[in-house]
Amino acid sequence: MFQVSKLGNIGLVFWAAILTTVFSFNITVAQEGPAPDSDLPVLSLNQCLNLAMQGNPSLMISNERQHIAAKSVTEAWGAFLPDLALTRDWGKSERTDFDADVYAPGSFPMIDSGGDTLWFNTSVPTGETQDEVVNSKYGTWGGAANLNVFNGFSKFSTLSSAKSQLKASEATAGYTRELVIEEVTTAYFNLLRYQRLLQVAIETRDQAAQELERTETYFRLGSTAKSDVLQQKVRLGNTKLDVVIADNNVKKAFNNLAFSMNRPLAVGFAVDPSVLSTEYAMVPVETLYGQALANRLDLVSSQFNLDSRESDVTTATANLYPSVNLFGRYSRSDNESPYKFGSQLSESTTFGYSVNWNIFDRLRTWTGRSQAKANARIAEYELEQAKMNVQVEIRQLHTSLVEAAERAVVSAETIVQSQEELRLAQERFRVGAGTTLDVILAQVNLANSRGQEVQAMCDFLIAETKLNRAVGRVKGGVHQAVKE
Image 1 (cartoon, rainbow, N blue to C red):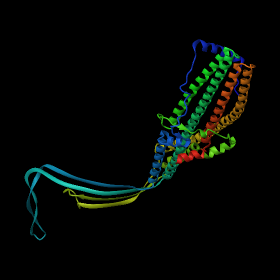
Image 2: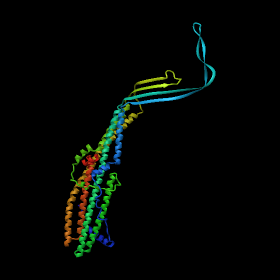
Image 3: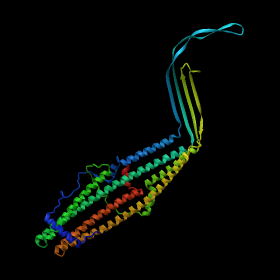
Image 4: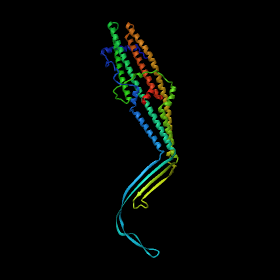
C-alpha cells in the first residue's frame, strides 16, 4: 500500500501553490480526455490474433522452412528409386580428302591351277589426283537404368534424418505461432491497462475539480484560508497532467498492439475490456514442469533435431561399407558413313551389377563420422540446456504470478481503506478539524490504490499468458482463434 508522508510534502505543496499564483500555472486538457469513440470497430482478442496470423513474417519464414524440410523428405524417398536416363544423338558430317588418287575400272589376269587365265575386275589408279568429298549421317537412341541396392544404410538414415527435420520444423512453426499469440495478447492487455489507468486519471481529475470547487465555496464563506484554495489548484493541475501522460501511454500501447498485428499504420479500433478479469487461479509450479517437458513445442523441436543428428552419424558411416548397384543399358545406332565396317544399323543391350568398396578415402569417412557424433552430442547438450532454461523461466513467471495476485488482494483492501480515509478527511475539513493537505493526501492514496489494482490485474494476466506459452498450454479460445 502506497502512503504519502504528510510532513514531507507540506513544504512542497506550499511552494507549488506560490509558484501557481505567480506564474498563473494552468494545464488544459482537450475536452474531457480522450473518451472512447463509439464509432470505432471493437476487436476481440481472438480477432486480433487472427489478424496477426495473416502475413506475419515470422510465421511465413517458419512455413517456408517447413516446406523445405518436406521436400527433403521427398528427396530422401527418391534415393530408393532407380536412376533413368534417355539419350538421343544425331549428326551429319562432311569429309574432304585432298589430292586423293583417281581410280578407273580395270582388270588383271590370274592363272589358276589348270593353266587357265582368269580375269578379275578391279579399280586401278590412273595416276591422277583430285579432292574427294564424302557425306555421312549417324544417329543413336539409348536408355540406361541404375539402381543402388546397398550403400551402407545411408538411404535409410538420410530418410530418418529428413523426417526428424520435418517434425522439428513443424514444432518450430507451432512454437512461433505461440510466440505471436503471446506478443499480441500482452500488447492487448497493456492497451487495456493504460485505458483503465486513463479512466482512473480522469476520475481523479474530476474529483480534484470538485474538491477545488468545494474549497473555493468554503473560502468565500470565510471558513478556510486562501492557501487551501491554492493547494487544491495545484492538485487539480497535477491531475490534469496525469491525464495527459495517461493518454499518451494509451496511444503508445495502441501502436504496440497494431505493430504486433503487422498493421503499424492502422487508423484505429477499440478493444474489448471484458477480458480484463481473472479469478487469480494458479497451478503448483511442480506440476507446470511436467507439463512443459511434455507439451512445449521448442523442446519437441530440439528433440527431433537430436534424432536427426543421430541419424546423420549412420549416414556418415556409410562409406565404410561396400556399395552395390544394378544397371541396364540399351542403345540403337544408325550410321551411314562409308568408312564404317559391318552393318550400318545395330543395337546393343547390356545389364549387370557393380560392387565398389572404397578401402581408403584419405580418412574423410572417419573424420566425417567423428564430426557427426560431435554434432549429435551438441544437439543433446542443447536439449538439456533448453530444459533447464524452461524450468528457470517457469519458476520466474510463476513467482510473478503469485506476486501479482498478492498485490491485487492488497490493492483491493487498500482501496476500501483509502476511500474511508478520504471520507473522514473531507468531514474533518468540513468541520474545521482537518486541513486541505489531509484531503489531498487521501485523494493521492486513493488514486494510487486504484492504479495499483489495475497494474496488479494486468500483470497477472500477462504473466499468465507468458506462463501458458512457457508450459505449452495456450488457452482453448486462443487455439480456436488460430485454427479458424
